[in-house]
Image 1 (tube, rainbow, N blue to C red):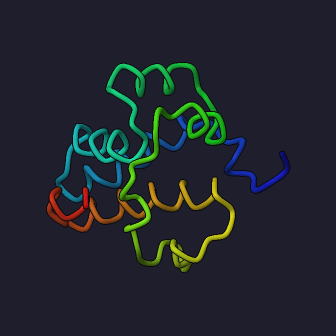
Image 2 (image 1 turned 90 degrees about the horizontal axis):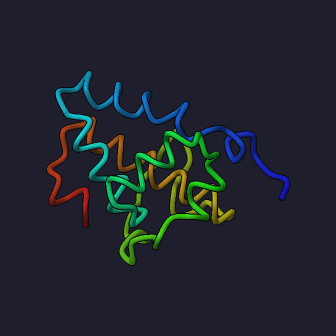
Length: 115
């Protein structure tokens, strides 16, 4: 499958950036893990395995137990891109994750983030 470079980027290489972004704004690694688990259906052990195995984003989402049924309720702009308008399904999942981490870093309440 050809596609964007992010598809073959290791999730483990981006995960610490998500955590750093959240922690700079007073949030925690545990909260980052919560939003990732909510979106993907991984349990904590499964998430940690994906990180340790250095799976790329394509594999990370392909092996995810189940995308949350309310993921389509994630709306807004990330990096100038409206997440609901992204046509590629994998890129949309990545943008959903980016948006959730952005909302977390902006101080949004977990109840609001986890629609």
